Length: 425
Image 1 (tube, rainbow, N blue to C red):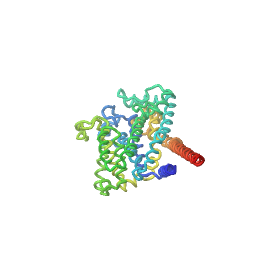
Image 2 (image 1 turned 90 degrees about the horizontal axis):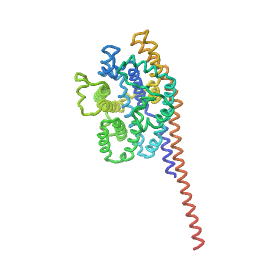
Image 3 (image 1 turned 30 degrees about the horizontal axis):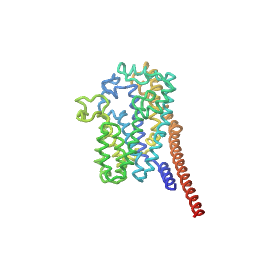
Image 4 (image 1 turned 60 degrees about the vertical axis):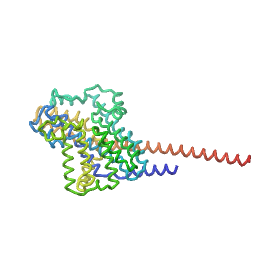
């Protein structure tokens, strides 16, 4: 019983430990990048999908979608950064302590921690859909994408289907999530978390664990789970102080940083033979935009973990604040874009040039997205964190009580046996 209480106290200490601020900053910048991409998807889709969509800014749309300029709205690259960060952050404390209790605590709490904000976001979306506010998105796409519209919000809202998406589909089914399209990542996030938890428990203490890491990386080479494995490997190697991981060579770090950003800018639009990225389009990867974005994310993470300069940049107040609200921002921004942003655009487009209507609509939307994300963080996201902790603590306490009761029963039985033995001896 004392051992279990000690493990619980350790876990609580780890949960209360301060976060690495520059990693929060990176997460915040990545969340903003996803938001920018969705502004483009709604109002200037050619900036993301290239020639597959109508151009509204002349050749600039195509230039944006086929060169490193696309980093400004490289949402898939930023999602890969989220996944690498998860693999690193979720296993870092374990590799520092080699305490299985840290992993068990995180694994038990993971669903509730992710679920509470997801449920709130889906319910908000259900209300918006029921009020008919997503019609503004559908009308905007007629203008911005025309016949090439890639549909969202083309469904009939219902409370049962909304609850099902929040509770089950987002985490255990995946794929299309109509009430909040960004939730396609939740299935990957949840199972990716379980993957690194399991690998840490099974192989984290073995000398041969690097063989298992490599085998897993090969196995998941063409899936987003590769990002989690990269993050976990960084958590292990950074704690092990391996010479191959640590470097202060600024030239080397600069080369890796530029290379990572270039891979991260690999376009979602078709890569042509005259493209900057044509030499990467070898056919080796089934989904090159996924694998290259993951590799690029890993390279960015490597540089950040070794560069004091970049750490200082991402530890500054604005990125850290964005990191604090990043999960909430990620969950709610597309709901605002699909309602308010598109409504503003439809009001401005008939009287202003397309570009002006685009920029004003996006800029004004930030005055709702950021405060809403902060309130969501403060009252929903934090509630999810506290609920997951309370659930785990109660589970541990109940098991401890049951164990103590079992020990009392054994002691009582032993005492009775001893008394009877003395009487009838």
